[in-house]
Length: 385
Image: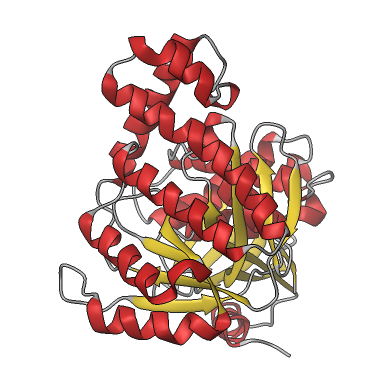
């Protein structure tokens, strides 16, 4: 059965190219249950793929021409040859994510094997909400070319997508988003070691729902502040004489961190304590202990608010509203890079409606908008449809 998103992309493809697509792939977005700003510090994260995704329908060409249509941007077209240098555009930005992945794939040994493609891209991952719409797009492009790229398994596809975002698009993200999209497991979170790249599926308890609540606060500061936080973490690691903050525990930080300036010390304390919380959360989730998971998510939010300083008052209010509705039965925290975006809650299904009603009654974004509530399950990772 063809879903609505894929059917829309297929219709656009037929209108644009005059014949049906022969390949269909998808890659999901993700939500991070716990483990914020630990990925680029070589640490641990506990995300899951979600049922919002990017779909690409395509048809290989006999030549090396790329023709890419963005169904979500008024069927805008980007066209270029694989035999010419692939350049970064000033606009539109969506095109750079596709170009970046293609550029990275051409650098691999399999590059000459890449075929030209006619393709249409469509997605329903909310953009600007911290749910990794960009990683979803990048991993979907990798999945499309997997048959032309020997050895492009899920982890390698995730790393190709990350390099494209880092080096071509210019966003210095870690690898969590791409690994989550490429390696997702239905009804499981993923305990990801962002240094070793080990991925361990952790079952989400039956009867637990994932609520993603969009605050409708534009994350205008996230890029510059993200880079600042990353630099502060790197400064702390250098001072402590370790490759990354992954190599520090709270005892070492207490012993040797006094020489750091107070702000940098707080940044390091968040990352070090967050790594410990992720490990504890994976154990709690595996044991079906939602109350313990709730405690850890609450501690994570406080750490993001006070030590890493990436929340904003409206996000803190949204977390408080949900927590008051669900009590100790589940957990809620800000998720994503910070300064707006989304709140994630892991709650018993019977409390979803109470939380939804509380948000509708008590929350308004600064511009007066109500929050948008999504209730979803952990989804499978990228693949062919």
